[in-house]
Length: 146
Image 1 (spheres, rainbow, N blue to C red):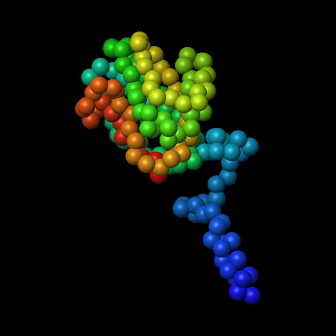
Image 2: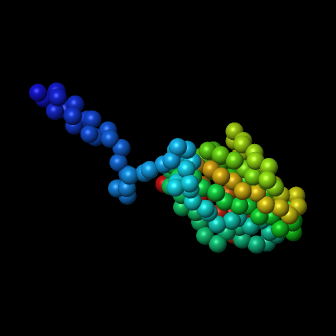
Image 3: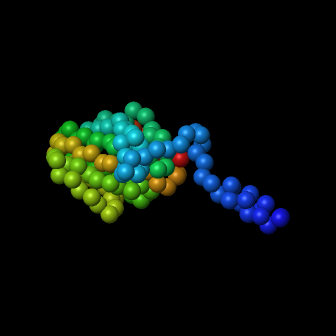
């Protein structure tokens, strides 16, 4: 009888629970469903201007989309290899062209343009994206995945 009691206790302990006590309900697309999607504020690539007004706080397992907008004032890149390895990139859209990469290290704007990146946050931790060769706090965005 003790074995059955222990087995039942371990089985109940292994049942996943959600911190917010809500039951997640996804459509046929699973975590890629619209009900699991959140839009993030855009990142603006412009000479001497801040990348973002606030840090990002993300939840592992949630699908996010954000735009990177380059104004063409200068050739600028955005790097964040640790962040890009902590997420799964669904697609990058540039002028209607959908790109589905296996990984990403950086992006660069040689002229004015816009791209959108859709991804699922995976690995909890502290990350950043920044303009390479800069040290100012406004030239990077802090990202936390919980």
